[in-house]
Image 1 (cartoon, rainbow, N blue to C red):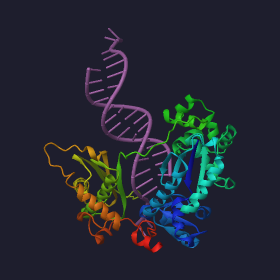
Image 2: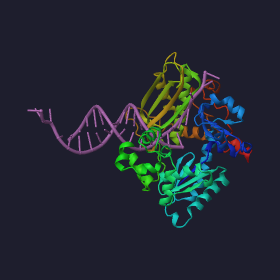
Image 3: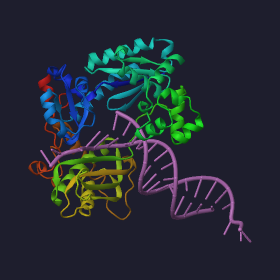
Image 4: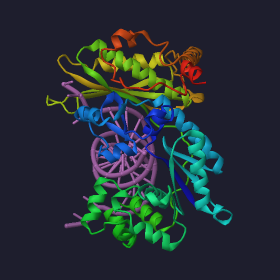
Length: 422
DNA sequence: TCTGGGGTCCTAGGACCC
DNA sequence: TCTGGGGTCCTAGGACCC
């Protein structure tokens, strides 16, 4: 058996933990650059606030309705997530952190010794008590069924946040009540295909043949999903793996038209990506930079990217920044209003196995101590206390950095804030 | 008219997830 | 004026190999 634990309205709930005056009030959290709504408290959902709604269209209405608005605060949500996952790990020998707000717990054999519904209730209470975050728990014999159970736990108020699929009858009842588009792995496109073929519920899908599903849902992926829904586990626990790509991309607060600002941005983005790279102990063999016009602008779109293969793989911010800036010089064009830029590191490998170029000098080992110092200073004192000069001064950065005007404090990670809270 | 079989690797693009 | 970011997996098709 698997349990899927999912935090309710996670970002909105995190905001509420440290600001009790928000209890009972509608809250929304915005995407980066204060673009659109990505998390809503129950009260906000009840008011009819839609997921993905652009903020600028609703700002006045939010004000009228007393909706509390926050910029996203990933320092806070990331740390709260870490705490929730630590707690969950005490309930299972095998925890799979699936996303920032959900995790699978392998409960194999637990059904012989525990009442699973009671066990789920215990999990709920503990997370609420220790981390202050409400969660729902779904339990089933496969990961897909646990997901489905969780969906029902969320939708049905009388479930008390727990749903268990542990018998054939429970499976049938659950799947009859789930629209096919809500199944994990069925996106917008496949939902349309299925509905067009008269398959509206998860239950109806399980009644189709393997051949039919294979044809309509594209081969192995569909068949796996079908078997999972029928109760045959095909998906195992995915243990944490090193990322194969690491990206840092951002929209600008205002459009950028000068090459200096563009270079500052990719310098900063490459530095951030390099930081993530070192955190997972990898080096990158290639770096891609891109920049493009605003997505919704009526002007002629312009998109250009450039990939640079590094002479030898590196995790040095200095080397990566140099390559990123060089790449950006081939992308900049006079008169273009750039809305977004980004850096993607690829061809990642472990940092112990760096292959040094035979004929060129490599700085990767030379820079290692410097990078360690940089990372520890920035971790301790907060972001970007020390940075590459070509990232620009704070004054200059304000000209293009993303909007983040409604951000709450970093309650759990910022040194000054932690002292205050204690 | 007839001209094999089996395999790997790479890339681009689609679909999906949160 | 103002519409997010970061991933994974799969497939198809081409190039190439013996």
